[in-house]
Structure formats: C-alpha cells, structure tokens
Amino acid sequence: MREILFRGKREDGGGWVEGSYCQNTQSISQPIIAGWVDGDVVHSVSWVRVIPETVGEYIGIKNKNGVKIFEGDVLSRGEVNDDREHFQFGRRYLYKVEYEQVGFVAEGIGFGYKEFVCRDHEVIGNIHDNPELMNGGTDE
Image 1 (cartoon, helix red, strand yellow):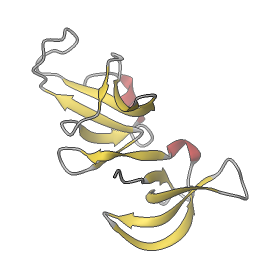
Image 2 (spheres, one colour):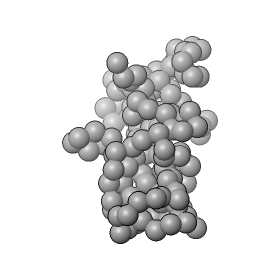
Image 3 (cartoon, one colour):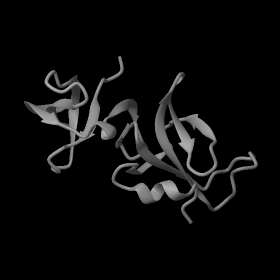
Image 4 (cartoon, one colour):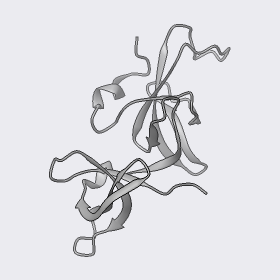
C-alpha cells in the first residue's frame, strides 16, 4: 500500500514540515499539517499552519538517492541515451512533478514533454524554494 504523506512550508517561516494533511476548521482556506515526521518516525504530533500553495503530496517513490519525491519538486534527468528528437546528449533535462488524471507525472520545463516519474530522476529542488529552475528545460 502507498504511504499517504504531505509536505508544506510553515507559515511562520520555520521551513518544511511533513505529516498528514488536515483542513483548518477555523479557516477554510488555511491547510495545516499534523505531525513532525523524520523518515518513518513521528516524533510528536502537533498542528502546524502551512502556506496553502506549498502543500504537495508524496508520490509514493524515492529517487535514486533515496529522497522522497513530492508534488512540486523539480527533478533532473541527464545524459539521456534516447532516440526521441527532443533529447540531446550531454544535456540535463528538468521536470516539475504534478498530478494529472492518470497520477503523478514529470512535466518537462521548457519543452512540455510528460513522462511518469521514475527512480532515475534526481530531486534538485522545488518550485517554491527554487523558482529560478522554472526558467528553462535544460541545466547546462
């Protein structure tokens, strides 16, 4: 069974928190994350207000370095040995993780190609902390 986990950036500026997603009953538009998760261990349970735009779901797989991949992450895949015309040797292609009707996909930044996320992708940042990564599809 897939692990259900969310991540959001703390409203108080204290960084990122992972846990269960809950809707704040006092403010319909303000999501909160319950719990402080480190790996598979919940250290304590508390309610943390997060910035709504930053909430992303864990997609259920880790990348080649063992890092959990979340919706909103920016991925890299390089040195592609593929005959599809949009790939070129010696280039590193960037993707953002998003949810579509079929599930989580990696959408090419700057070239629009979509593929399923796999362990060969490397997490290099996210769209919230690293907006500069959204400026193009290659990192040369």
